[in-house]
Image (cartoon, helix red, strand yellow):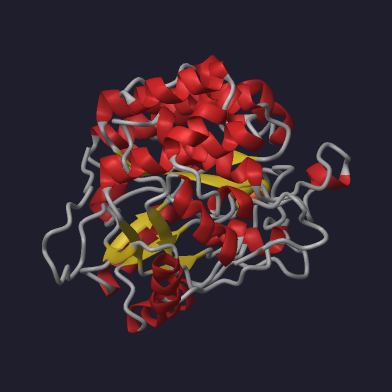
Length: 405
Ligand code: SF4
């Protein structure tokens, strides 16, 4: 298996195909790296300084990190790799926020701006259900023309049409905007979203939880403290969320480590994160690239360092580390299962955000394809629901890592 191309020389095959034992790989690493990894194996999470070191590793150090993450994954969550059959709906691309990493948003009046009517959203969800979806994931642009109660109206319509469907919707940015439009505080707004049909929320809009970085990426977006407040309000209301990171742009390894430590602290308090999803920045069609703030970003070793380091930094806090076939492509996403990941994400069926930014991995991966990718890495595929209960487990013997705040 190889994802290497001329444009993408940062290959990782040698890390995955390294036949040395964990102990041999640890012995080949420098003493500082070896110390961090041995302590992680013994149950001590890396500090921010140590995490920053791990995210910058290459060569023998990275090989030892990948093997350590794989051992910790096997010890903590076993060989099952889960996936969810879901349907993404990005119902509007109209947005005034202007994030420099985003190629999805359009201003109202642009030729390809759209704001889907509710009937079209319902049709797309039905299409997902016909293909076995247990979840709809709804996120959209921050549309200035939405009515003050627009998010409630959409939820109510979806809930009325699909009473049993799991609705995973609205990033903290959408909650921030919706609450302001409805003149409600976050707990009150989230409570009403739940009453309208919301089950869980995506923990997106996190990018990097550092205000200096956020100011460059998107100065109109909610700040770190507000993101944290909204996530904590969701967890307090019994609404589980995912947690995410966008990496591979202007951030440093230290920013990534501090971001993970912050997520870990929230999880210690609430237990409301279902999974952690590191999302590789897709640079091709973005302003960040056009303005020269980021160059070409090869995929490969850095991605595995982020996945593997995350497994160590979140050990005992967030069990489910999700890879992203949309961002990495099928081959590299499969290889990342050997670097600490235990979840393949969803089938999606519609994916506009990464595609517009230049990702070319498609918008739909069937459950069968996901299972083939998982088996190709010697692991055991299982379908799950959004909160990580296993669905139709034929053996009944695998431990689920279900999460409820
Ligand atoms: S990332 Fe979201 S908020 Fe930012 S410009 Fe794109 S659609 Fe708008």
